[in-house]
Length: 264
Image 1 (cartoon, rainbow, N blue to C red):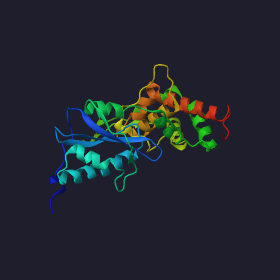
Image 2 (cartoon, rainbow, N blue to C red):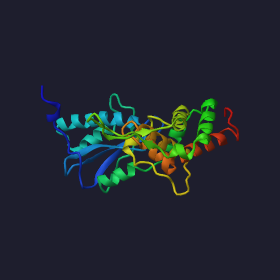
Image 3 (cartoon, rainbow, N blue to C red):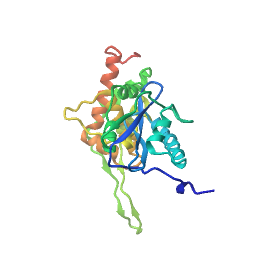
Image 4 (cartoon, rainbow, N blue to C red):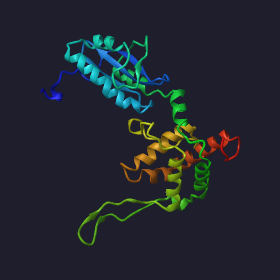
């Protein structure tokens, strides 16, 4: 059996204009784009980083379909025309009928893929657990209890130890800060629905305010990012991002509950 790595493939990049199809989920949310260029024998899947996480798995399915077309000797745009008929086995998304379009370049298509829509915001806000009044009360109280000392996270002493070994330094998170982080997860603000590794890192807005969807994005990036890089939470606590996230979410929930912290 031939090694899969040796299977015929379209090129994965081009500097020329590309034809593309839009792939959306059952609710109409755009998951990504299938693109092609005949001159460079190039085709591929362009993920929407702001879209649903299912787009990652769909990209594998659609890329496999493109590989099959290449193995049969189809030109890239011919493969695109063949895929315009619907979905790939195992894929969540479907090609949007009549969506065949042209982008001036692959980079331009990638920029289009980064545009955040109202549907993207609504999808993330819907992940928040509005019915868990206790969790929201805990978030409000944990945020109110946070002190400047908690925000100024200290680090353990690293470097060479007396026994000759070397130890990595790590952040020493206090109980109140850990309580706030736990509350963010409890209300649903830390979600696998947001592709945080495919998006720019969150920043503190100039006015210190975040919309609820951006608060979910930031909470997810900060809390999940800590698993891969020690100190992500420490930075967010120190620069005000964590305060902006908690404040935004509490304000959203209070408005959703008509000014009280009861069940909406």
